[in-house]
Image (cartoon, rainbow, N blue to C red; front, side):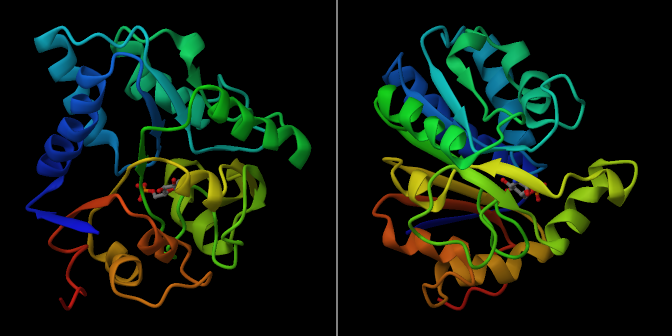
Length: 242
Ligand code: GLP
């Protein structure tokens, strides 16, 4: 695992943004896995700036997002589809028909599993971007999730609902379920880049890099992948020993 420690959020955006843009420049029809949350915002900002400055072509790029809140419409301001349009897709020349986010209207795991088939049809994910929850979740794969999981309807833990309530008016407005790519879906990506910043991510980063591999810290599964880079600030890296 390649661990890159940087000074601040701006540098996380530059490092990670360059890793993604290098893929896009090298392969005009690359397939990217994308993430939401506060962590990737600086990356998306940097990508937008560079894309404009260098006229980078996204017209044949495909993207698959990790997850979506169950029950939220794409137009809902807290849906992940809305987030992606607002923070990235509306500002680059990507064809929205090539951007996939699980539908919040999915009602069964059979429907949810179709998402993995779409990814496979697209040729698989070349580079998957990830954030991380304070409890070590990736996507919305909470502690205890099977390492064999594919895209499905998942229950959010109270910790995650509490953490994500900062984006909503009230905690009671946060959906209690989501549709998330599974751990196996994520591990199928050819390359993975995970970003994290701040002290409250330090424990999860420790378990991801140096902890024992097990389902209690879903992020630890990444130790079993051969091409993972993590880009973290000093606070998020503060519990690493090696
Ligand atoms: C949500 C998302 C995760 C994300 C996590 C961390 O729970 N489903 O994919 O990694 O939040 O969010 P943040 O980057 O805001 O700390």
